[in-house]
Image (cartoon, helix red, strand yellow):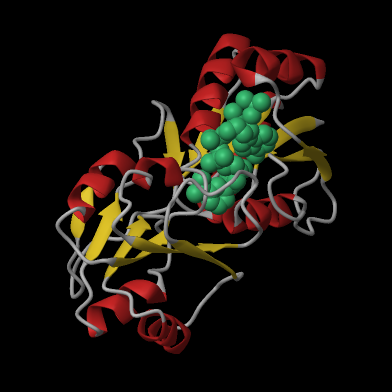
Length: 253
Ligand code: NAP
């Protein structure tokens, strides 16, 4: 029996977990940070909460006798990704990182920045009413922009006080279509959009902003830790099957 740990919290992770339950001789443990509601992933054991840094994860991997790790956390969950890479290396078990292809500008143009701080810097010379579509964890980077008004969209109420002067929090769960995003930008009189490059299907907010001639600032994905990268459920399950075959000494053709 192979014991698989999926580091989740994304649709990709839940889809992979569902697909992996079709494989035999596989026990799946699906791990969540516990920030939002649990996904339904029948056939998996769900564990919730942090491991306690790299050291905690090392202990967990050993105690739970994990054979293989798929890090399918969000592209911006770079702390977890780094811990997973270090811990798996230390314990000597394989790990793959499930990545999402970043959006690339084609018909829609935007200004790319590498960090939240750089986005805040660039915002100084842009509009006054900002759709700050970055979640709620990194708002502190924008705290000094007291002359701006921010629209924050979140699934759940922010855990910590919002460190901004002028803002509104809108609680909504996506996905959002073009008409919805256009209405939102118009009704809140947004004149600049800031978004993370979350990747995957291009978000409708980008097209809506482009159509309304609203400038877009995109924070690019952090570089994933060194190691094997996969970009689809099929690639991830193929890699997992290969591992399971090699464990059983079944020749691969
Ligand atoms: P992060 O900054 O990389 O991680 C912070 C800490 O949260 C980690 O050190 C770890 O705690 C814990 N953690 C994160 N993912 C975990 C998982 N799957 N299972 C158990 N513990 C986990 O992560 P984040 O950006 O806060 O994201 C938290 C979760 O939300 C992730 O699972 C991610 O996939 C999901 N998510 C994130 C975003 C985003 O934009 N960042 C968007 C959508 C969904 P310990 O150090 O104690 O182990």
